[in-house]
Image (cartoon, one colour):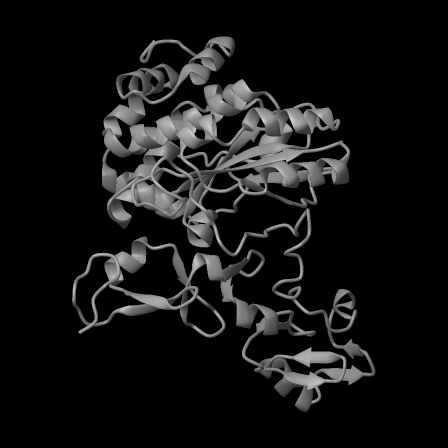
Length: 408
């Protein structure tokens, strides 16, 4: 009998996960904790490094299904495994093809009738070629490298329990192509760049997942930020930029219930301290409404863990444009802290990362009552007691006058 690749248990019902060059078997418990998902096209399981996430559809696709998927010219749904009708310049899914055969939809040359005008542009392949932008300096929005490195003092492979953080820093109004080329010449082993439609003349700088220690000691944020500023970029002052921090969901607890409870506690801390969270974030009211809304949870009604988990279930389906984005849990097994305004100041960036790590660990290891009574001063005390790096966090809290004692 085959053994699980992680826990070595011999059991029935193992799932085969494909990676490069071969694959491995996982039991159901270890599969739930793995960075692996099921392709929506062929329904096989793959490492995240071999999958593409289609944000608009909420689906994962392997490379083969990625390159062969089509979008129906009528209903715009995705069609996999060549399960579509080719009507010249038009592609139809099975349902729309039946309607076409019954005369409910018509095809005339390169046009269709019976559908909205914005769908009359002919057939558009959903995806670029799988390797189409591997050599691009700035890649399409949503791009993720096929192989992710997980940087910590332990190894370059994903290690259970490490609270990895991936940073997305938006910069704007600068010399785009020269800066991008120089960034990739110097930092391509640590970051990649993507376009973002919310920016005027800029891009996103996205880091590989890394521990806080790596961000502080090895990522060379000083060099990255100085380079961006030298090429005329702004972040905070541009008014269009955010700073997003993705954190490994799998490290927030030993099982799904513990992880969800940690996330629920994080949301409750935000709710109980919202005015101070906003001050910390430097966001304007318009930016909050557009990019990182409040969940408006009734924290005072939460009296036990069952109620906290129930509240979390109620907000899980909310859009990603919230202060803590939960949609990314299904996308890439992370929660995303979206509240921060962009910055080119090293101290502000480090303070934000130290806050995220401290809050996550505080929520993971303390009680619901502790969370409901906590504020920024509580977090700083927790960081100091547990030797979490927090110098920049403490200095930033002092500048923002956010160090009132808990309960004051």
